[in-house]
Length: 619
Image (cartoon, rainbow, N blue to C red; front, side, top):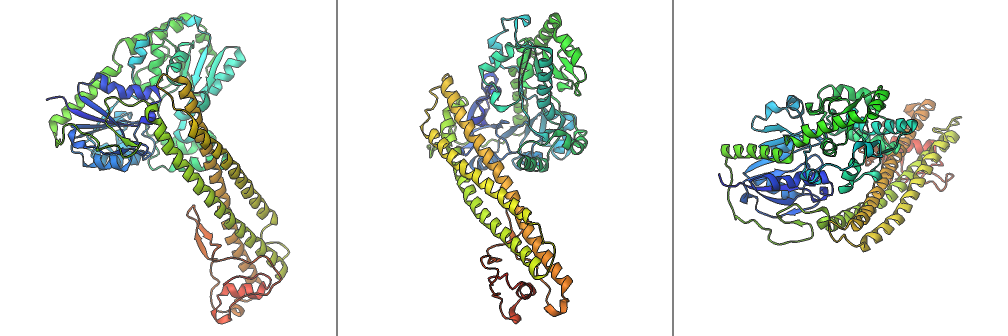
């Protein structure tokens, strides 16, 4: 058949990562199909005719799991009658969303990181006979690596004995996620104790991008690594919600060991350990790898392709002995180069040819194309966020200014709403605490109870916590205005080669996002305290009623049951005291009750009027 027309959907903001951009560009370079690109995420307005295409390929940087695509793209995708291809990674996040999208949007081909034997567990493959699942890697040998050629420095000349960049991604991804962080910490300790030079970091600020990353890999005598992926599939997001709540409460990730009993049974269901793009980068740069022992897509063999470190780190002496053997390092590095780079089996060219073959086979089976205008165009850009068809994917900085302004406006709006909500919640919480305090004082005085309903210190400490958080929010508002002013005047990078401009811009972007993350974390703490005050208020009422009933027969109070405190719903969805309707006058504990006539009073109101003459309510 003639060259199929393909619309390749991607996220422009993911293009700052070399591995992602090389993956996206590979389809244009190595496919015989006619490919156009369009950005579909972060508010993009997609106003084109999809039916001018035979195929839509949705790349992994546009993810259903995190709802990153806009409604205009999804509407067009739903109506499109050609062949639909989904490339998906990180499938362990909100897996049910991805599966639902495969069904709802009728994808024909799914390129997945899940091994074939794991597809039933992850996607219930038997229920999707019309979908072709093809297991692929998360990255391949890129042309950029091949163009750089072999490094000129020998392993013996490299001054950094052990290099690594990783991150602490918390406990939710199980053992494979935990190893990404702990392997760096463990080797840093060992290198320091043995007096070996190393460059190991697991914080976000130390990450390296672009050509600088390849320079770093080529300067290391060895590179640490772990298997890519996770054996913990969070199908409905429950694990994510729980770990996020813990992070908000603790201000840091919970220890992996605390989650081990819950995660270990889940990890037994599947084995996802795969090679990552870093594996090929090290192979191409002739940099030997020290990897946690694993399956690595059944491609790499321990002691032939890498130096294995046991997952319990019990063989450090053996690892460092091999690291000192330059001849051994030379052998395994050249073996990796020959098997994974020079062979051509794992190049992007081979990958794209395989994908194209599957697409053409599906087109032959079900040519659903409905040809419209053969030259699809947008009707004109309505805003800076309207996506246009491009011959090549746009570099991140080309759209980054418009998109970053858009994201900043959303964050500023959310922050302003947060501040307003915080002030309202703070006032509500203060009223609830005052209510609890007065109930306790009145109960201790009027019922001659030796013990307060709750210790006064518990009210005061909660009030102090809320005031401290509000102070942080006020300081944050000042900081935010400073960052906003910087954002308004910073000059955009002039090109992809303007590294100082790009670095400056990304530094500001990082500061803004970190600041927003801190505010969100403080807000989570605040809502937790707010919820506690609501519980205190409700329990205080119940304890007062119980104390009253223990001292006075129910018959003297009337036949009605004492009602629950008037409840509303707080932000967390739990029952809470509504201060607007259950407002307590706290200014004058000695004033007389404002209770209504007995015939119209509830039992609770009569309890307050009879036993707490100093505690009045508006009714």
